[in-house]
Length: 278
Image (cartoon, rainbow, N blue to C red; front, top):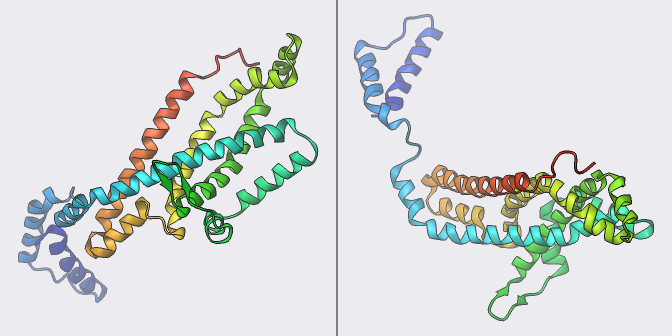
């Protein structure tokens, strides 16, 4: 018996005896058994879970791998779609005016205030997006709905990231561009935007991590991404719940850690030198 299996009954007996006012009912043989169990079982304490369950998880690693690919694909596509909408939206909120600026701001507030699962359900069951064919490959309606839902939600948050970074560039930079003959649009494009993009890397890093984790919600529209496939596995083998969850958590950690380190490098590599942005 393991150390924990030997120690638990002895501890229960001891607590019961103390509660009744008597001496602990642990014999010398029990104490010796506990001590020997601790010595023998010490080497097993570092190992979490059952070996047979870990082998079950590893045998199904290819099944989880398909979910990893779907998770990565959804994350990248949603981030790019969110950038394509979020950056112009942020620019409109800084430099726009009138009806367009109010419309962009209102849509952003609605998307940020709506749970992502609601957005996904609306995109799939209400809007009813079609399948998209690219000749050599195609995207099923659930995948398209997942990209659109995650992308729209990401666009609403990215718009605020870029709104803040665009507004953080000193007005003197824009005036300096105009003073050398650039139009207002050209000054924004060639002077302000490059600086804003560099400053947006830390916020963009957080958004990438959030979208990566939000891909687990697409199970609501029938997509079997990483977390859903993990649920399928421990539903099949109920004793492997801990092992499956730890394995999936490790995958998410690797994806998040790798992405964050890569963006940290970009942030350092393309940081604006001190004194050149003011």
